[in-house]
Each structure stands twice: as structure tokens, then as C-alpha cells.
Length: 154
Length: 154
DNA sequence: CATAATTGAGTTGTGCACAACTGAATTGCC
DNA sequence: GGCAATTCAGTTGTGCACAACTCAATTATG
Image 1 (cartoon, each protein chain N blue to C red):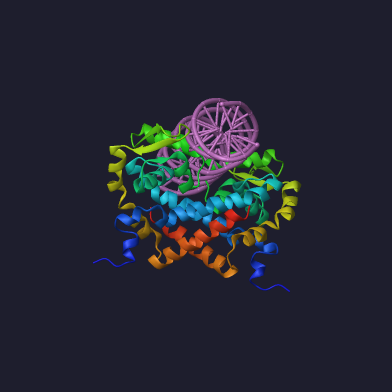
Image 2 (cartoon, chains in turn green, red, orange, blue):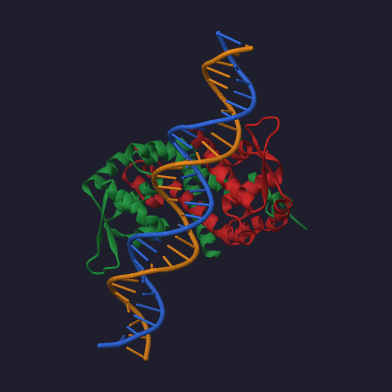
């Protein structure tokens, strides 16, 4: 016997696009990046570059590995991204003296100064989201638990 | 005066990475794609290719424009993706006779047959998600409203 | 009916993601 | 101390996303 709830993920209905939570997540994530784009364009940043700057604004210097840990990205993604941030004059990369394998990423003055110009973005995006603060909190919590479970699953 | 709720998106705390709903969405979406990857590898598909197949399994043929409408993707993304699906022998593209601008995408026999092998994937992913069916339903609903509001915002 | 505007698919160029790999530096282990 | 295993950053190659563009076909408009 199958309950109505189970029928949503089992059975032939399961392959319907509008039933798929993952597609909703994929779509909403792209919609969020698109909503950020005009705001970030003013700063000359892409969304992943903005994320890297958020980490550095919290504490710097950070090694490439530490940045990758925070963002869930590997050096294959971060190395060229950081090279572009360096070309923009926002960060500086320096081989660590204690451990020559590590590369420390420092904020330049321009990189640190950019923080002030970014400070309004979270509120502008929250306004555009059309959800209450409580809904956003709950959404972040649910997504966090989901990501953890998915990471543990393979 | 500022309420505790507003303090989450306004003020200096707002730029903290772990406060950002959009980063949670970005991370969870990549985690979902990663969870799909081993399952889709068995079918020889990437996640966006799987999404295109989901649409075609619901109804075919579909024009490139219709596929783009369903998936929120433009021809710049879909054209090469469909070319790869065609190279895999799963779809066939044919110029429409009534409107020579349109290209209709048909499933091949192999493409239609793949549906059976994909049928278990939604349930496997729902299991890996570690959320109740009710939570998944609510999540999908919230993400849908969020994506709509974000699309309307610019 | 002629032509201007729009639509549909495709191409080009940029920037992620991510797998697979390289090579140098460090750590672990005997 | 010597060497194997590991760690760290980077490169290469593939496949999205997406902007900006081209070009042909169709529709709208005077």
C-alpha cells in the first residue's frame, strides 16, 4: 500500500519536472544569482567572486584551502577566480613563508574598501525575495540540513 | 529602532556568509547536483541534460524555445546541450515544416527507453535528502515563490 | 504589398564547477 | 635521517550559464 505522500516521489508522477524539489532549487539559485547581477555589476564582481570577498571581509588573510573550505570550492575553481580578483586589484596572493605549499590571500586597501559599497546588498536582496524574515530563516535552515544530508549520502 | 529580525539583513552582520540564504541555496543546489551525479553517470547524462529529458518525457516533440521556457534556459545554453543529446542518440532535431525558424526536438527510441532507467532516481534522491515529504513539499513551494519574486524584481 | 519589427536558433566569448592530473612542500613512519 | 604518503595550489579539459551577437523566417504595420 502506498500513501499519497509516497506517491509524490515514487511512481511515474515522480519524473514530472514541477514535482522536483531539486529543479526548484536549481531555478531559485539561478534566479538569485540573476537578482544579484545588476548590484554586483556596480562593484565589478560576479556572484562567486562576491562570495570569496565575503569570506575575506570576515577574516584575512585566508589560504586558498581555507577559502575553499568555506565556499565548498576546490582549487580548480578558486585559483582562476582569485587570479581575476587579483587582476581587479582587490586581493593579493602571497606564498606562505611557514608553509611554502600554501598561498595566502590578502585584501588590498581597495578590496577592504569595497565592503562598504557591498553593505546594502543583503537588504536589497531580502527585499526582492518577497519572503518574511522568518520564512528566510527557515529556508536557510532547511537548505542547510538538506545540503548536509546530501553530502553525507555519497 | 531596529528589531532583531531586521538586524539579520541590515547592519554589518548582514555580510556574514552563514547568514546568507542565497549562499545556502547555492550550496544546496550544488550538493544536489553532486548527489545526482553518480546516478546520472549510469545513464551517461549531466544534470541539465537530465532536466531536458524530463521535459521531453512529459511531452514531445518540443521546440528549443519550449524547452527553454520550461527550464528557464536560453538557446545559448540549450543549443549545444541538445547537440550533445543528439550525439548520444537520445534525441533528434528537425527543422519545423510550418515554421522554418523552429527546431523540433524528438525522442529517439533510445531516448524514450531511458525513461525506465531513470524512474528510480527521484525516490533515491528523496531518500538521500533526509527531509520528510512534507518538508520537501514546503521547500519546493517556498523556493517557487522566492524564484517568482526574484524574477519580478528586475 | 512592402518593409520594419519581432521571433527563433545558433555562435562566440567569459566565467564558473568539477574531474583528473601535475609538481612541489610537508608530514608520518620506520 | 630517509622515504612513502599526504597536502596544497595550479593546470587542463568538458559542460553548463549567460551576454551579446548573427542570420533567417515570420509577423505586424503603414
